[in-house]
Image 1: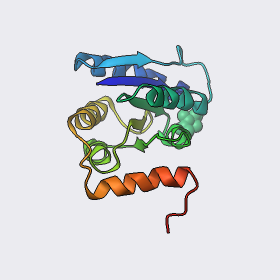
Image 2: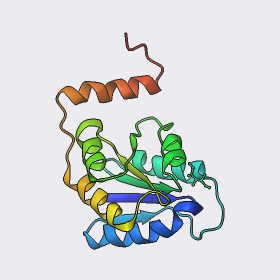
Image 3: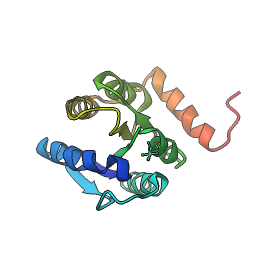
Length: 150
Ligand code: RB5
């Protein structure tokens, strides 16, 4: 799998750990910044990662801020992005299976390194189930296009 990863300053330290873990599993990781823990605005890095995932079909993203909340909200403003704020292996697996999530988000102030490893493992091991979930995912996209869902 190929991952684009980005954070804000509050997720910077966990980015270094996460990159090393994802690489150790044999996946490709592209670091979109920031390059230090100097203060930045999380929407800037959410957008960089979201745009990269959309431009590179089949790729995934990882976004980290202090809580994971702001950076996931921002990423989800980009059409085609399904950025999931996860807290454990269950949510990381379920969001691949049910939501076809293409960006995994979490908070450096919320989860520890062991939980990060278990979320990455679960996210990578789980395929989208399709079926009854496919129509719901289509409706997510329709929402972002302003469609009337009826
Ligand atoms: C930065 O202090 C913090 O607000 C940010 O990392 C994130 O938690 C926002 O949702």
